[in-house]
Image (cartoon, rainbow, N blue to C red; front, side, top):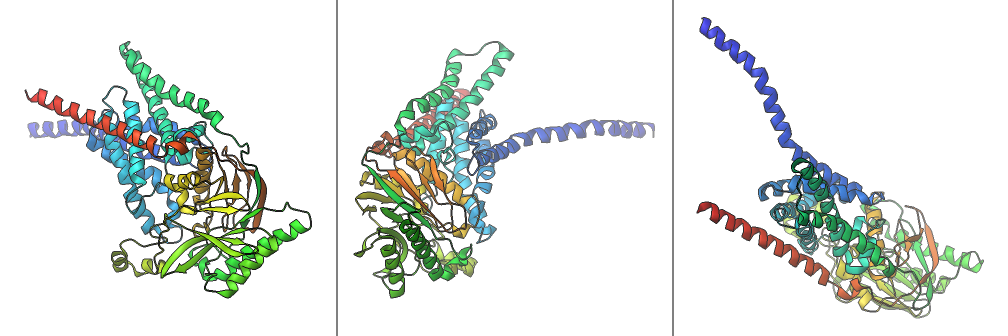
Length: 536
C-alpha cells in the first residue's frame, strides 16, 4: 500500500510538470505556421486601396525567417499558409456575387504556387547569396501563376502593390518581374541583415561575404530605383490630345446589372450628351477623343438598330470619335469588343478582347461544373471567343492602345499595344459586378504600374468607377467616385519612345526564371552530394 501510494504521489507530482512542457512545445511548433500566415496577411495589407507599400518588406522578411534552413516539405506547408494569408483577403471580391465557393476554390489553387515557392526558397536558403536565389524563385512562381491554369491569373503580383512605392521606377527598367524581384530581394535582405547582427552578437564573428550579400540585397534595389527615376516622364513627345472618359454608371450593382443592358447604354449616352452640353456652354474643354468603358453597350449595335442610333447620336452630339465597349456576335462567335465610332462615318474599326476571363467570360470544365451546380453554368450561358490581334485605334490622329479590363494584369497584353504604335493606353473596364470591393482599386494600381512600365498616359473609363486619368509617371490627375455618373476631361501627353521594359519584353522574366532554376539546381545537387558523402 505504501509503495502504491508513493507511486501515485510521484505520478501526481510529475504530471503538472510535464503538461506545461508539452503544451509549451506545441505552441513553439505552431509559431512558424502562425508567422507564415500572418506575414501573408501583412503582404495583403501592403496592397491598394491602402498606400502601405513598404509593409511588403517586413512581410517577406518574416517569410524568410520561417523558411530559412527548413526542409522543403516544411517550406511547402509554410508557403501554403503564407499564400492563404495573402490571397484569401486579396481575392475576396471574386466571391462578392457568386458566393464563397468559387472564391475559396480560386485561392486554394493559387496558393499551391506560393507553396511551391516556399519549398524552393527553403532549398536555396542554404546557398551563398541566398536572398538573390530566393527572390528569383518568387518571380518564377509568379511567372508560372501568370500562365496556368486556364491561361493564368497574375492578380496579386508583388509589382501591383507598389504603385505608390519607392521602387516603382524599376517598372520602366524591366517591367513587373524586375519591380517585384527588387521588393522581394529587399525584404529577404532585411531579414539577412537582422540575422547576421544577432549571430554576430552571439558568436562575435560574421563572414564578410554574407554581410556583403545582405547589404547589397537592400542597397542595390534602392539604388536601382533611384537611378531609374529619370525614366519616368510626363512630357509630351508627339503633342497632346484632349480626352474624355465617360462613366455612365449602372442601374444597380451585381451580376444582374446586365439585365438592364439598355439602361446602361442609355446612361453612357446621356452622360456623353451632358458633357456635350457643357462643352457648348463653355464649361468644359472640347474633347478630341471620347472613351467609353467595357460593356457600355451590351446590346449589339450591329444587330439592333436602336442601339446603333443611340451610340451614333452620342457621337454626333459630342462631335468626336468614341471608343465604345460592346458585346458583338460575329460569325457565330460572341466577342467582347471595343468599337471605334466616328461621328460622321459611324463604326470604322474594332478590337476584340484577347485575354478573356475564365469563369467570367468563358467556362472551363463546363460539364463538370454543371454537374456540381447548374447555377454556375447559367451565369456564363455562352462562352466568349478570343481576339487575335492587338488593338490600336487612330482617334483624331492619336494612336490609342486598347487593353480591356482583365487584360491589364497580363504583361504581354499591354506591351503588344505599345509595340504596335500606341501613344497612349485606354483600359476600358466594367467593375459593377464586384460592387464596392477593393477590386477596382487593385486594378487601378495595375494601370498606374503599366503607365510607368511603358511611359504612356493611361486612361481608365469604368462603368461604375473608379475611372481615372493616369500620367506616364504613374500619377493620377483625375478620378471619379464609385456608382456615380461622371466624366473626366483632360489634355494628356502623347509619347512614342520606348522604355527599356518595353524593348526587353519578356527577357527580364526569362533571366530571373533561369536564375531561380540555377539556384534550385545548385541546391539539389549539393544536397545529393551531401547525402552520398554521409552514406560513405
